[in-house]
Image (cartoon, rainbow, N blue to C red; front, side):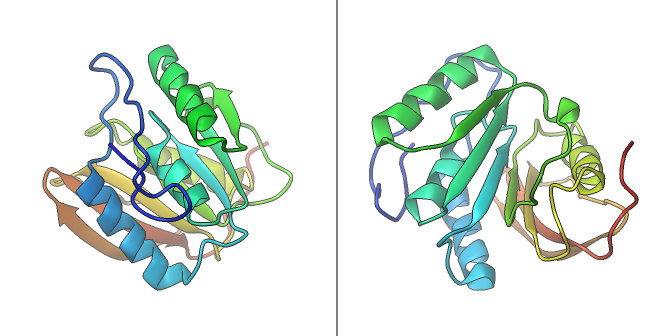
Length: 185
């Protein structure tokens, strides 16, 4: 596993030990970032959240390409250890939250890009997007990427799927919020 492009291009990343985390394959990550680049143009100055972060490969890729900030959220201890080691090895400046995505609270400012790679078959990506929209993590301008198993779909009320692509065992869906949802108390 390595960084695909940007200032840290080619730099290797550590993967967490054990079976609890399934890192996004380099080819799927390369395809995802090609899809994102065609929609965003540039990552310069973006606020990014890497949710179900694992090794942090998605968020670190965004930082390598010029994102201004990344918040990583991961609850597995082994994954957080690998994530923090990857951040240190690259000299990245980032926020790491060791908690479940489902326990996140409201934020002061929305993110420009949300990267979600939940466990396949869990439906957690759709649940998380609905919750985060209500907590102010995104606006209709925020681009959201959800990786699922190739046979899964991402159906979230209020969100529109812009594009879906299958890469091996993975399906990548890019979505945007179609209209604001009521906030969570």
